[in-house]
Length: 404
Ligand code: AMP
Ligand code: MG
Image (tube, rainbow, N blue to C red; front, side):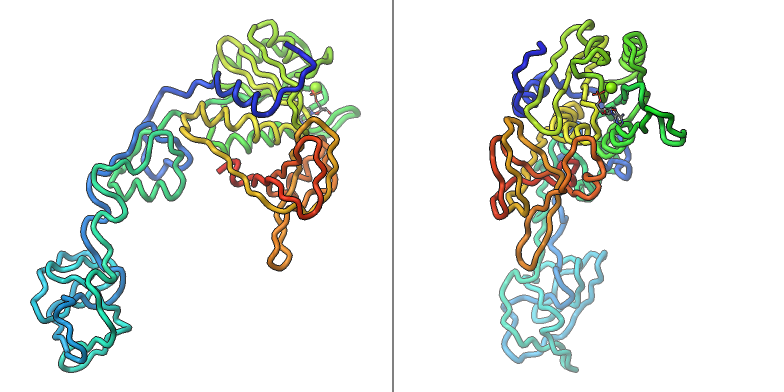
């Protein structure tokens, strides 16, 4: 189990995904409160959107065949948006506005900017072709189609589409309940003065933020003392409340690494030396049937392993059907000569110099340094055994994409 072999990121993610059971409880939530939730059912389109042909501009509905250059057309009706129109009288124009329904018989809309209003009616000075400026019934969504598939994460635009289907409530998967356990006798919470040997527990807050952004409910958040008894007792308590326990620290091979030891005892522990930097080691096990993801202790490693390994797992458990991270290919604006077998995730951000966008890396990439991640907007990849020089194309993952 604790082999000396390094495990590739792909392998670790594949093994985690194999064991990721999506939540099965669903609930119905008001559309207004659905942001970030995951659809538990396909959302079919009950009726065409938009429900009728309507105008894309402010102007005049006409029959294209009525138009002879220079001839005036009397304006026979006026249709503000929201009113049902009568059929157009042949040989006339109908005043309408963006969103107004097109009267039966009319087949084009002329923008008001292309119309001269005279005492005899309107004179149209441009070419008019049938269909112009008309937004067709059903052009957005067709009755019977699936507008949004089960497993879609609801962003603001999905909320808008759901509203256009007429649904005031939506079926979503229950939120994942997560426990955060930070291990370390050296940790104290902000608000207490540090004694010699102590440091503030920063991982707790990084993880609170990450889990909130990922749409999870944090049901328990505790600091674990470095004893086997305390570790076991708290893991048991967390397991009774949570769908997932995330720990930080305590998974190396030192004798103070009690999370590893307790998970070993409870069975099914995988402990990986991940071939990424920052980030090894990573543990995955179970306590009383509740999965435990054991992240490293170093603050930057927590951020990177959560984003690169934890999130794909979490998304599957949340019921997300397709969590795909594309990243961007961009020219590097830095030099890193990697002699490592570990793929490096460098805290980075895009910078623009005139027309050229490059990826800049924070100069100090120590895994104990989290402030670099505040300077950064994402992570750039330095492949194994590769020297990256300015101008070389590299992959960049923005935090926004990773957590989007
Ligand atoms: P560990 O894996 O427990 O040996 O921790 C590795 C390093 O990360 C040590 O320097 C710890 O002090 C530090 N560390 C562990 N947990 C935290 C935490 N919650 N907040 C800040 N630093 C931590
Ligand atoms: Mg520790």
